[in-house]
Length: 112
Length: 112
Image (cartoon, rainbow over the protein chains, first blue to last red):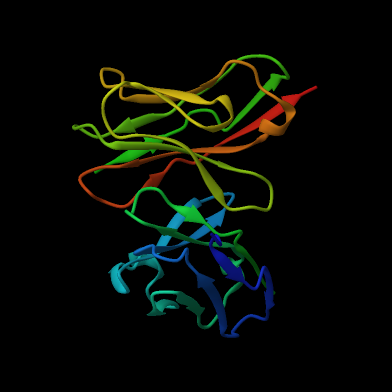
């Protein structure tokens, strides 16, 4: 079975740009998660979807971060506008039951 | 509210030595408990999980963890580490059907 796919693996953006990160979950998984990972803050939950419905949207990230699940096999995370403090690794994970999460390799975002 | 603490940010051991990585959780009832590992430039992978029953659970690659209700702990152990075990290890907890909360991680370095 294919694992979680994330594209692109690396993204460089100028401050103020809009960027879209993509994720394809494991086929058949009902839950999808977006996390941000930094050395200082660790893993922070951005969004959680269950069967395409948004269950949690990570409060502090609401204003410039928007995750969508267009269908059961594809999700996007839009950051608009980007700021240098958004530089981080963005991880997507899917799960059959919300607990056993299967992670993608991540997208490393650098905002200049 | 639930939380998880990994008191050791970095641990260094010699190859062949035994290992214990500590994890403490905060929750009144018994939560679901996990250990994940992250190798460089990769996403997280689940090592093992505890839901109920035998407090010692076995995972992949010779890892095991022991749940202690009295101590609110879920420490990870390995009898003999290999250089390839060098990675960052995350403890995670879920309680009352909520999403996973990850600890801050412990970076393990195995010296030859």
